[in-house]
Image (cartoon, rainbow, N blue to C red; front, side):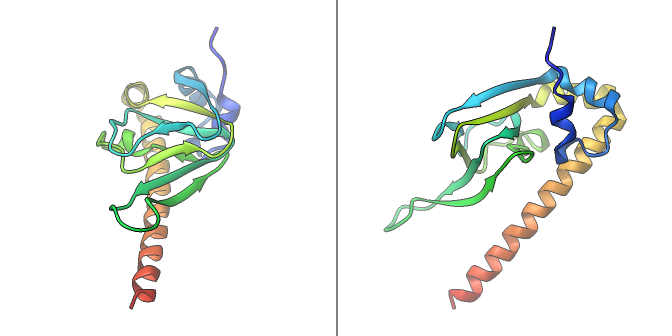
Length: 157
């Protein structure tokens, strides 16, 4: 018997707008994973084939900086319960654009890209809603990055 992760999925931006029945279609492809404090979840430039929904804990998303004095990486986001990380793996399948590691003991639901793509093809409504939700998450992150870049450029003059 597989675990039913519908309740956890219901609390995330990933599945906003899906019905209980649709959540039960997605639930069997979710895999619960545990990461200890400081454990790497994925590395920058690695092949991305899964996304993660945080159930408990926090995940730092960082990018490596060019060699030089001072910091070697920059935190882009501190993701917390209910947030999605690694979603670009589903969108384009390109190498990871950042590194993710647990800041504390963390529990996530892992969803493999191939598994969710199959569901999205078989259930077009689920596919539409999931992709719309991911687009909203990505748009918010892009706006935040643009604001941060604008502020950095302004203050560096």
